[in-house]
Image 1 (cartoon, rainbow, N blue to C red):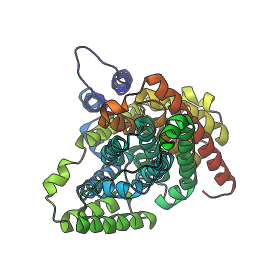
Image 2 (cartoon, rainbow, N blue to C red):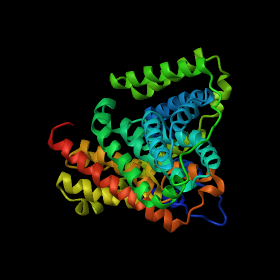
Image 3 (tube, rainbow, N blue to C red):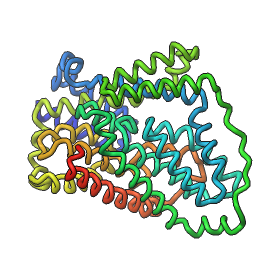
Length: 417
């Protein structure tokens, strides 16, 4: 079974890396599902092993619950209203960028960063159109800040959700360790953008303050209030140590019951493709673990990572940045999850993996789904040469990572986790 598992694993991760075959039209989710089916069809796993051992149902339930909650919040226009309320008070190009980065980062810490980008990109585009502002500082600010801010919690992005369910780290403990690194990451992203785009922002500033009147997004106040209560209930449950998955699903069920919204419309906005993608990856990675491939990969890499916890953090972090560019962060986190328990300090390794796999998303346009969403939804305004994005992305990856990892080490020395 070793050879079959190796072939399936290699083929699946080639699709995850964006490989295209002329006779197949499989994308990343399609490749993951096809790989999962092949693991069963070729006898690497039995159907019973898939149902019982391979799929981490807690992660899928957590994703589903958060998707339903954000779906109802989007229906209430809560994302756009909060963003509009904050941005309308910005009286200059620089101030607008500061507010945008803080709002995007803050929302992404509470909710999934990809959803924040979907909801906020149209508003940002409308604002820069109305004020005749240069689009790139604000679009990149939205994408980079949503990645950086999502570092703060276990529900900020899909890879953190994976880490939360696989590591069993308490939500409050994770956030206590990651809040300061997230804030420093947001601050460094903002500083990089302010310096990189200082001329464009200064040119607009010399013509006087912004004077743009944008109509408020239509807000359903009753539904919005219900969403706020539900989100408070869910976060409180997380902080008290209840199951992440079933606390989120309980909040989602309460919203479905009391919001009086058509459930079919709410479920229509759930990203079923992402759930299938996760399920397929769970099966593929469990298959390679079952036959011992993950052990062999780790054995080959372990000498490079070293034995000391600090050396492992930096060396494994550098490896993770590269790997996340090749196969994306979620597939890499699933594979790396098999190695973390063998490291010198697993808790430090889990926390640093969350930091690196998230901030690595700022490096290239395709390294993060948030980047792709912002650039796609903004149309021509989001067009940026790859090398220019790479230059800015490298600064918005390396600088936050250095500060965040140094902070994590300082917290470790102080015994904060």
